[in-house]
Image (cartoon, rainbow, N blue to C red; front, top):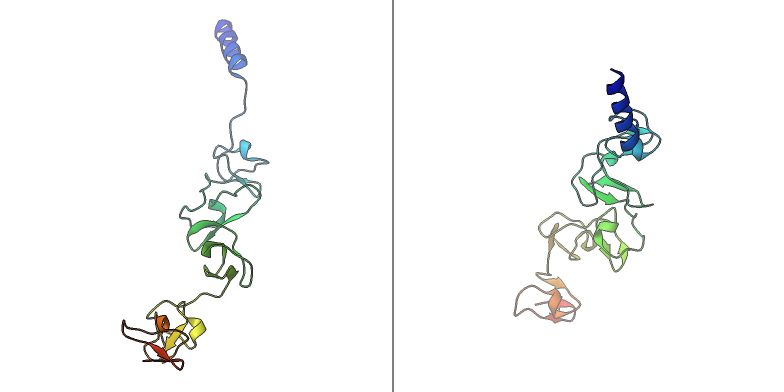
Length: 158
Protein backbone atom coordinates (compact mmCIF):
# COMPACT_ATOMS: atom_id res chain seq x y z
CA UNK A 1 0.00 0.00 0.00
CA UNK A 2 2.70 2.44 0.89
CA UNK A 3 4.46 1.73 -2.40
CA UNK A 4 1.26 2.45 -4.37
CA UNK A 5 0.70 5.67 -2.42
CA UNK A 6 4.29 6.82 -3.10
CA UNK A 7 3.89 6.00 -6.82
CA UNK A 8 0.61 7.93 -6.95
CA UNK A 9 2.18 10.94 -5.22
CA UNK A 10 5.06 10.88 -7.73
CA UNK A 11 2.65 10.85 -10.67
CA UNK A 12 0.60 13.71 -9.21
CA UNK A 13 3.78 15.69 -8.49
CA UNK A 14 5.15 15.21 -12.02
CA UNK A 15 1.88 15.84 -13.85
CA UNK A 16 1.08 18.79 -11.61
CA UNK A 17 -1.70 18.75 -9.09
CA UNK A 18 -4.70 20.60 -10.43
CA UNK A 19 -8.17 20.71 -8.98
CA UNK A 20 -10.92 19.35 -11.21
CA UNK A 21 -12.88 21.91 -13.23
CA UNK A 22 -16.41 23.01 -12.34
CA UNK A 23 -19.38 21.72 -14.30
CA UNK A 24 -22.02 23.94 -15.92
CA UNK A 25 -24.20 25.71 -13.37
CA UNK A 26 -21.52 25.89 -10.66
CA UNK A 27 -20.02 29.20 -9.54
CA UNK A 28 -16.78 30.46 -11.08
CA UNK A 29 -14.41 33.43 -10.95
CA UNK A 30 -12.82 33.02 -14.38
CA UNK A 31 -13.17 30.89 -17.51
CA UNK A 32 -10.30 28.61 -16.41
CA UNK A 33 -12.45 27.44 -13.45
CA UNK A 34 -15.01 25.86 -15.79
CA UNK A 35 -14.72 22.60 -17.75
CA UNK A 36 -16.40 24.44 -20.65
CA UNK A 37 -13.91 27.34 -20.28
CA UNK A 38 -16.93 29.71 -20.26
CA UNK A 39 -17.64 31.64 -17.04
CA UNK A 40 -20.69 33.90 -17.59
CA UNK A 41 -21.82 36.21 -14.75
CA UNK A 42 -20.05 34.03 -12.16
CA UNK A 43 -21.62 30.76 -13.34
CA UNK A 44 -20.06 28.05 -15.53
CA UNK A 45 -21.92 28.01 -18.84
CA UNK A 46 -21.75 25.65 -21.84
CA UNK A 47 -19.01 26.27 -24.40
CA UNK A 48 -19.69 29.52 -26.15
CA UNK A 49 -20.49 29.99 -29.83
CA UNK A 50 -18.41 32.10 -32.21
CA UNK A 51 -19.56 35.11 -34.26
CA UNK A 52 -21.90 34.13 -37.07
CA UNK A 53 -23.01 30.88 -35.38
CA UNK A 54 -26.74 30.21 -34.91
CA UNK A 55 -27.91 30.69 -31.31
CA UNK A 56 -30.97 30.96 -29.09
CA UNK A 57 -29.75 33.02 -26.08
CA UNK A 58 -27.18 35.80 -25.52
CA UNK A 59 -25.16 33.76 -23.02
CA UNK A 60 -24.41 31.14 -25.70
CA UNK A 61 -22.25 33.61 -27.68
CA UNK A 62 -18.53 34.25 -27.06
CA UNK A 63 -17.56 37.88 -26.52
CA UNK A 64 -15.07 39.19 -29.08
CA UNK A 65 -12.30 40.79 -27.01
CA UNK A 66 -13.83 43.84 -25.32
CA UNK A 67 -16.89 43.82 -27.60
CA UNK A 68 -20.03 42.12 -26.32
CA UNK A 69 -21.61 39.58 -28.64
CA UNK A 70 -25.34 38.87 -28.36
CA UNK A 71 -27.74 36.45 -30.01
CA UNK A 72 -29.48 38.78 -32.49
CA UNK A 73 -32.16 37.32 -34.74
CA UNK A 74 -30.81 33.80 -34.06
CA UNK A 75 -27.15 34.54 -34.88
CA UNK A 76 -24.21 35.50 -32.62
CA UNK A 77 -23.46 39.12 -33.59
CA UNK A 78 -21.73 42.11 -32.03
CA UNK A 79 -24.16 44.43 -30.30
CA UNK A 80 -26.03 46.38 -32.93
CA UNK A 81 -26.16 50.12 -33.54
CA UNK A 82 -29.41 52.11 -33.26
CA UNK A 83 -30.93 54.03 -36.19
CA UNK A 84 -28.96 57.18 -36.99
CA UNK A 85 -25.58 55.66 -36.03
CA UNK A 86 -22.69 55.61 -38.53
CA UNK A 87 -22.20 52.17 -40.14
CA UNK A 88 -20.34 50.39 -42.92
CA UNK A 89 -22.38 47.16 -43.35
CA UNK A 90 -26.02 46.14 -42.72
CA UNK A 91 -25.07 43.67 -39.96
CA UNK A 92 -23.80 46.51 -37.72
CA UNK A 93 -27.31 48.01 -37.48
CA UNK A 94 -30.13 46.71 -35.27
CA UNK A 95 -32.38 47.26 -38.30
CA UNK A 96 -29.90 45.37 -40.55
CA UNK A 97 -30.24 48.37 -42.91
CA UNK A 98 -27.11 50.52 -43.45
CA UNK A 99 -27.79 53.17 -46.13
CA UNK A 100 -25.23 55.83 -47.09
CA UNK A 101 -23.14 54.81 -44.03
CA UNK A 102 -26.02 55.51 -41.59
CA UNK A 103 -28.26 52.95 -39.81
CA UNK A 104 -31.82 53.43 -41.11
CA UNK A 105 -35.11 51.84 -40.02
CA UNK A 106 -35.81 48.46 -41.62
CA UNK A 107 -37.16 48.68 -45.16
CA UNK A 108 -39.69 46.51 -46.99
CA UNK A 109 -38.63 44.37 -49.96
CA UNK A 110 -40.38 44.14 -53.36
CA UNK A 111 -43.97 42.89 -53.02
CA UNK A 112 -44.33 43.82 -49.33
CA UNK A 113 -46.95 46.31 -48.13
CA UNK A 114 -45.98 49.96 -47.69
CA UNK A 115 -47.48 53.40 -47.04
CA UNK A 116 -44.71 55.70 -48.28
CA UNK A 117 -41.75 55.45 -50.68
CA UNK A 118 -39.32 55.55 -47.74
CA UNK A 119 -40.91 52.33 -46.35
CA UNK A 120 -39.44 50.39 -49.31
CA UNK A 121 -35.80 49.38 -49.78
CA UNK A 122 -36.17 50.45 -53.42
CA UNK A 123 -37.79 53.77 -52.48
CA UNK A 124 -40.82 52.94 -54.68
CA UNK A 125 -44.24 52.40 -53.04
CA UNK A 126 -47.22 52.17 -55.43
CA UNK A 127 -50.78 51.29 -54.48
CA UNK A 128 -49.58 50.04 -51.10
CA UNK A 129 -46.85 47.67 -52.36
CA UNK A 130 -43.08 47.99 -52.86
CA UNK A 131 -41.69 47.84 -56.42
CA UNK A 132 -38.08 47.72 -57.60
CA UNK A 133 -38.93 50.44 -60.12
CA UNK A 134 -41.63 53.02 -60.85
CA UNK A 135 -44.34 51.46 -63.09
CA UNK A 136 -45.74 54.94 -63.82
CA UNK A 137 -45.67 58.28 -62.09
CA UNK A 138 -42.93 60.40 -60.55
CA UNK A 139 -39.31 59.76 -61.52
CA UNK A 140 -35.93 61.48 -61.37
CA UNK A 141 -34.18 59.54 -64.15
CA UNK A 142 -35.02 56.88 -66.77
CA UNK A 143 -33.53 54.07 -64.67
CA UNK A 144 -36.22 54.76 -62.03
CA UNK A 145 -38.88 53.62 -64.52
CA UNK A 146 -39.91 49.99 -65.20
CA UNK A 147 -39.37 48.48 -68.63
CA UNK A 148 -36.60 48.58 -71.24
CA UNK A 149 -38.36 51.22 -73.35
CA UNK A 150 -39.56 53.34 -70.40
CA UNK A 151 -38.32 56.88 -70.09
CA UNK A 152 -38.59 59.74 -67.63
CA UNK A 153 -39.94 62.97 -69.09
CA UNK A 154 -40.93 65.97 -66.96
CA UNK A 155 -40.44 63.72 -63.90
CA UNK A 156 -43.08 61.23 -65.10
CA UNK A 157 -42.39 57.63 -66.21
CA UNK A 158 -43.68 56.72 -69.68
